[in-house]
Image 1: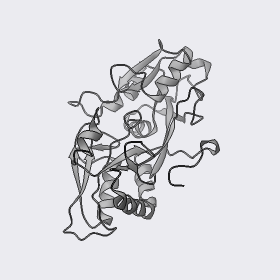
Image 2: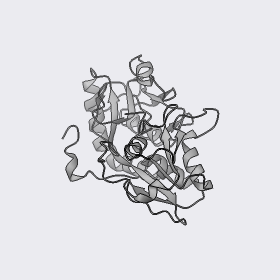
Image 3: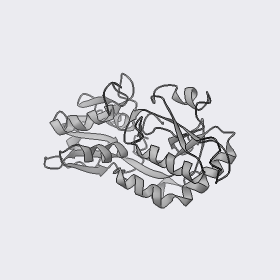
Image 4: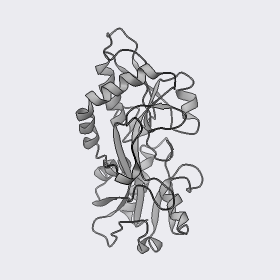
Length: 277
C-alpha cells in the first residue's frame, strides 16, 4: 500500500519523552532522496519539514538516512535499525504500528484547464476515448488504484503508465506524468493528490484538479487514505509521544501541507471510523 500511493516517504523517530534535552540522540529519519513533494536529499519536502518540526519539539534535530522507496525499503530501513519511524504510511498498514493520521488526501483527476476534458468520475464514458496516464510501480502499471479500477472497467489499451520510481539521475521522476499532460501526450492523469498539487504549481500549464469520488470504488479500490507515521510494533511509547506531538502541531502541519499544495480530503460517512477512533 505504501508504494501504491507513492507517498509516501517515511520519517523516523527514536523513543523518549515529549521534550528531550539537546544532548539526546537525533530524530532519525529514513527518507527517499528524490521524491518531492515528500522529501529529497536537500531537505525540501514537506515530510522533511514535518520531521524537523517534531524533532524540535522533542528537543533534538532530525537526521535523515537516504534510501530510495523501492521494494524492501521497510525491511532495509526500519527493520534493519537504520531508522525508527517512517512517515507517509496508510493508517493500519499491517506490518507496522501506526500513529494518529496527520493528513488525509485522495487520488485526483488532472487535466488541462483550457482543454475539452471535464472528467468527474471513473464511470465517465469520456475516459474510454481519452489517453489516460497513471503512475506505475514496476514494469506493469496494474498495481495502483487508478490502474486497477480502469482495468476492472475494461480500459487498458488507452492507459499509459509512468514510473513512480524513475531514473534517479534525474530530479523529480514523479513529475513526468504531469509534464506529459502539459505536452498533450495524454488527456488526463489520475495521480495521488500530493503529487498533483505540488507539481501543478511547478509546471506553467494551468491544470484543473478534481478528486476521484467516491473514496471507495465499486471495483473495490480505495482512493482516499488517512496518512500516519509507521513504527516497529514494539515502540508503543514512541507512538504515544508522536501522537501527542501530532495533535499539538496540527495547525503548523496543516500550514506546511497547504504550502506544498497538498489537497486534503474529508472522510465520507460510509467509510467508517479511522484507526484509533
